[in-house]
Image (cartoon, rainbow, N blue to C red):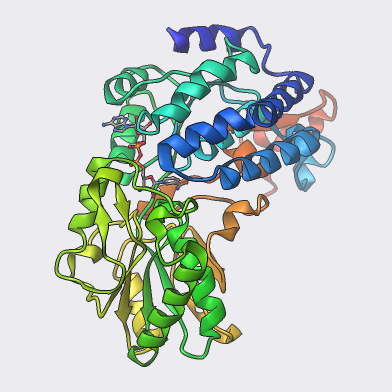
Length: 444
Ligand code: NAD
């Protein structure tokens, strides 16, 4: 039903004028600022976290889109050849049509509304399906977003698996999915039936290599933040550490200090420490502890979905916690003999969404870049690339297909149409291409 409404609205052409797009983007910005408290309350209820990181990035994305839209949407002239020297040759970005956006629960606003920014900017209609798992955020989005955006073009549809599957039967012009790789494959299968292109923003195990010569105090501070923010439920969180055995105990001690500094001696009662989203995920994360040596934390409270910031040491590649994305506050340390073995370890596994390397040695960093692959590589920090809107955000291989943020999102949700406009004169110049192709005509 919502799909058909969005389709009809798109067909009127109303979403195309740049003025209209800018107006809707500004309304979306107004929604975020005016409803900051509703958003914050919902995120607190869903994940016991502060919504700062969700909306900051979103506001930045909207600002860039509003400022640069005219430039992105303009015809892009391309290089001419002798054959096209007198013609107009350019790329014209045009809207694709109706986009389906399927969001995930871990950053329920950022991963649902940032793709919407790209969809609106590119002139599309969009059906927005927030995750049912972050139910408070989904409800607020369904109730309040239509008060700010055009209701026909950008409907919000709430629901779980069956509602999403029903949506996936419709013929969309693009599907933008954020979530796990297993469901990602189902989305792509459904899309294939209509030859609908997809963007899949997936996850995986993002490694973090610590060079023994790095300032461990700084490195561990940044890693502790990147890992335990949102209780480890961040798609680009460092999943595990790779380091030499000689520094393992110092790494543990530095992280211990940071955990105490950030979350006190009692993270459970500290308001800035999050919770696991639900019982199912709580049990999943706890089961990953099996057979591991706990160096820090390890305690939990099922009634609150609380798991302490936990570090595991002397973990092996074959252990349970190394078989799937952790998506929780467990940080395993796997020891390797040096950067060669670290590179080998990474390359033996699926291509990650992010790869982190901490080292003062520029050559070592360049080597890791040259000899591995991942959605993104960040040296000497974690997570921050998400906020650099000029960088494409997305995975490679098992961590995803496609990219977004800023112009990358605009291009992803546009058709880049090839346009060639010739004049009707100078017909003699075309003589060669018309038959008969006699030797005389070809000059042979
Ligand atoms: P989730 O359970 O909220 O699922 C995501 C969406 O898929 C939801 O809207 C849900 O309704 C839908 N869905 C679930 N099962 C379905 C099915 N069988 N058929 C159709 N639709 C279905 O979220 P999740 O998958 O637990 O999210 C966590 C994963 O997402 C992690 O792997 C994480 O790394 C990844 N993630 C990636 C990014 C990114 O930007 N790359 C961002 C956030 C999360």
